[in-house]
Picture 1 (cartoon, rainbow, N blue to C red):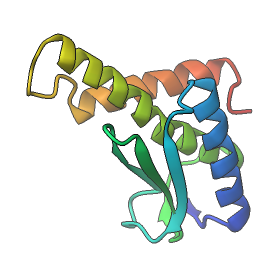
Picture 2 (picture 1 turned 90 degrees about the horizontal axis):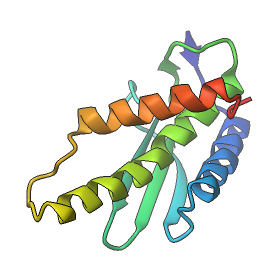
Picture 3 (picture 1 turned 180 degrees about the vertical axis):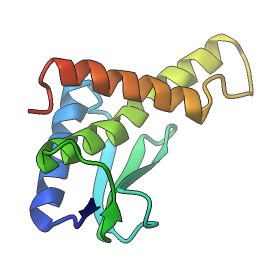
Length: 130
């Protein structure tokens, strides 16, 4: 299915992103939300600096081919949850790295996404996105 993200989707993306930020107690982060043109295969993305605790979360303005589980709002909420989860996982990875006195990143991007996807599946069962 092709998804054309609307202004209403963007507003819901921000609203839900702020809810996730609050629920995960990530209020110390300064998060800027943007409605940007991203690579066609990405619906949303996040860039962040763990040391300054600044983040930029972007939602794609372009039409994207995606699989949606029949509920566009739920899909947008899951994307917001996914991007904000990067901040939580980033903090956890930093704690692990510091505890091991290692310069190497302990959690790979694949491992981080695996954790995020497990969080999404768990929260979905709790009707968090409804």
